Image (cartoon, rainbow, N blue to C red):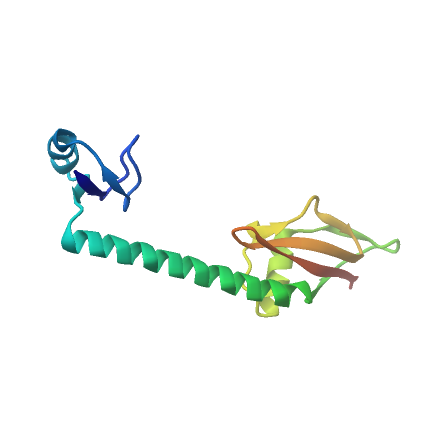
Length: 147
């Protein structure tokens, strides 16, 4: 019997999956506990349309991330900080400050998506990776200027 899962079922599948199970398991467990519905007619069509819609939205987000990558790869972000005579800054430049500078340029980037090996503690130019979406990463040029 074909069942469309409404909720995740351990060992069977995730919500939205269409699985083939025995009649007794379907009637006595899945349908009785409202974990799934019969995969016929309207329910089957809705499931297929929902999966197609999710795939379309995912592709749309990935295309947007690729377009943003092209823009960010050529972008230069300037961060102004207080620094000493030797070029060593007081404190450090963190991903939060880089995210704020990117927001000023019009890019929506979460600070968690900025990859820093270590906080920046010197005045100068550095390349920083920004995770955009599912494997799409951009390299942003960050210039730390002394005030």
